[in-house]
Length: 338
Ligand SMILES: [Mn+2]
Image (cartoon, rainbow, N blue to C red; front, side, top):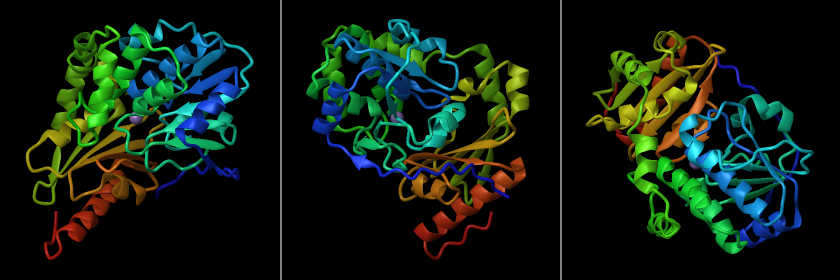
């Protein structure tokens, strides 16, 4: 059976527009900026750009993340002196739900002053929320804040923001990309960013361990429902054998989406505590966010996730049941037996 960690907040969440969000940042100081666990380019790009931008205005900032920050982001993370102090204002970036803080969730539940996010599924856990669900990446929201505040853009902050844009859009390939995404990227180029090198680091570089892990993950592939659904599994055993950690699993969710005819790409990743993280990538008419909501998760139209406590077999059974139901609703009259 599925067990969900329920963290209840009783605060009312005030929705802010860009002006109000900037006013809030101007009025406050001594910021702690929080990234989500298993950090990606978007949460890190958001946090470091904001920290650097606010620091340039004479404000104090520090950043926290439950998990280790991968070295591949050094080109902007190392440019910020992340020193601890007694913070007064807590800002969460790119975090749809308080539980996504991972190991920091319990410490900060009910304490987030401002959340800056782009997930339509945001659970309103913060006191204030600046949400732009049209934004392909949270770094688009951060860029808007830079322009409205205004905060100074330079090569490093532009590189951080560009990293979020490019990683959350699969290098500007996904359906979430808009003309605005490209306009922002074009503007960031004027700060002398090395977009080719960022692309190489983010998309074309993998360790040998990761390559071997991918081989094992591909060996686990299962196809269901007339090949409309592909399921991949990454276990702790596979990670141990290849010397990989959870961070090395970034992008595994996307593999199944690249197979012809697959409308639902599922990846089930075992976490250190033995629970599972299920990632769902869909093509229309399926909706990843709806599918994951059935199991207590959420996300975007085409990319979403949820957690699962139980056996791997049960995780497969539960997620396949939901995918089957979604396929049957969208393809009325067709029965998907396996
Ligand atoms: Mn994001």
